[in-house]
Image 1 (tube, rainbow, N blue to C red):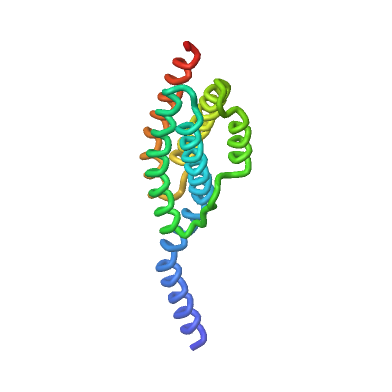
Image 2 (image 1 turned 45 degrees about the vertical axis):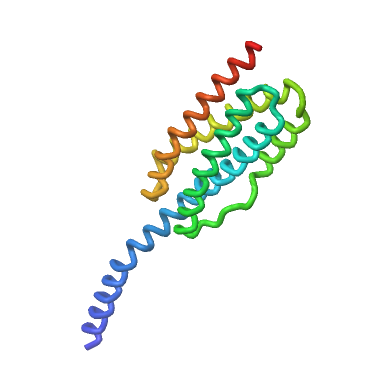
Length: 175
């Protein structure tokens, strides 16, 4: 009788483990991808702020134009990130990182000068290169298929931004 109960209990535990395994796997995958979602969200917030600053403070027309594009595209990208993070129960920050804030503060010190344009473009080029590396790492090693799909979808947008920034850098150097 005891052996029958043990077998029944073991069978029931195995069945429960099989039922809960997919949800446990999904939670683990979401947790694995949480740092990516958090970093991308903060990056989007920083890019939106940088774009708004460029539209207001840049002296070069191409910097103003690229800034407007960043605001538009990163706002749209962030809507997707926030929806996915909410679905996966990943809490997001309400502000850019301390390092991103420090960079924006340093940039503001150059408002009204040509140094602003140069510093803005250099900062944005570096930021977009780092974002592309982060996206590539997520696509290669991410655990959650939805997060990886979102990363793949964001990559061409971020790559296009880097292309626009580089073109603008060339124009600013010529003037």
